[in-house]
Figure 1 (tube, rainbow, N blue to C red):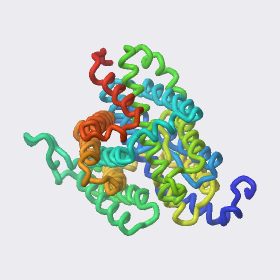
Figure 2 (figure 1 turned 180 degrees about the vertical axis):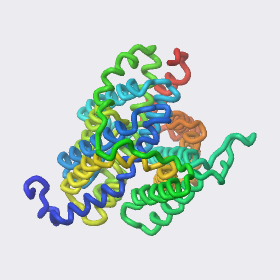
Figure 3 (figure 1 turned 90 degrees about the vertical axis):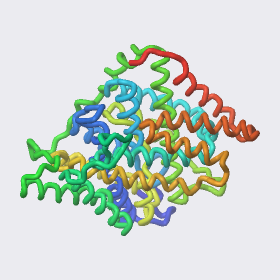
Figure 4 (figure 1 turned 180 degrees about the horizontal axis):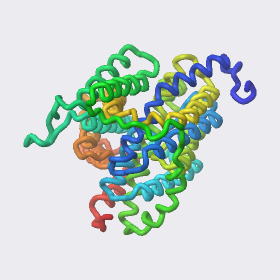
Length: 446
């Protein structure tokens, strides 16, 4: 244990690391239930719920073990919030891919990430994106996720002759979601460890009591069996999706891969750097030691996660919860990963977690992701305009990719117009050109 994780060198103990690992797990365990909100039954993806939970737990365990062993950092990985939204609403809904073909695209993106990470190209691309746009991307995805949360909670409506409006508040599931939102806010501002996970469980319990005691529909289903089981029906399905993916017109295929790779790349780097920054691992120049190994772990975990049957795996900022209670080594990660394996035993209770219990989590996670807004220089219009365009177009267009395209293009245009061309990295021109190919050149839709 000492030789593997260097506990004495990092001035920590086994007990401290285990407590830190448990803390991280309960802070990010909400993804076990929330991921099916994007990938499960009733979504444009339509994968089996238990299969989504199985893939989520296995990919989180694998990715967390990997980053812990490769870097000895107390970081954890799981299918990323925002990235699952891209999988659902961009790949499956907008582009019309089946979930098998979408998993195939994620697998290829993971392989691509491995190659550009090993060769150093990934770091060059990341460095090309101005910091202000990286912050804007995070905030934009946060607003997009919050929008989905409000919609899932029943708080939005487009039936009043307006583009958007408030939904009916006298619906039982909406009232439960409002209760869950209030509970989540209280727990978060009180800084209760594992607040998001506790909120899901607490809201679900209240929903169960109301539904079964007063016969009010809260969207809760009884389990068909109390015996824990896993569903491997999505395992390896990505390989059967290659035929559909590669039968698409060339430009359509390029469009899919550009979309996935751009969004995945910037989101995974954003969360990794965000976690490292909060943990205090960045050096005086803002660089992360062992960043190549960290990026390699999420690249490998992405492809492996696609084989299991889930969207892109990324480093979680919630890792800082374990760090805040003393986690300093990969033993913290090992503990968190082990907890995700044990979480497979939760399958019998998954039906007891209604959408009303997970919707508030999306809203609050959106708030947390918007913390990046404070780092944008709003007094400099050349910076503020492309940042705002990036942020606002994601929820308005209901597309993270479209937000990226408009944000990046507006940045290049504004910089040229203000004669600040030297601030534009050459790679940015290439990225914008790829978006032009995606949107301007005609191609046959799926």
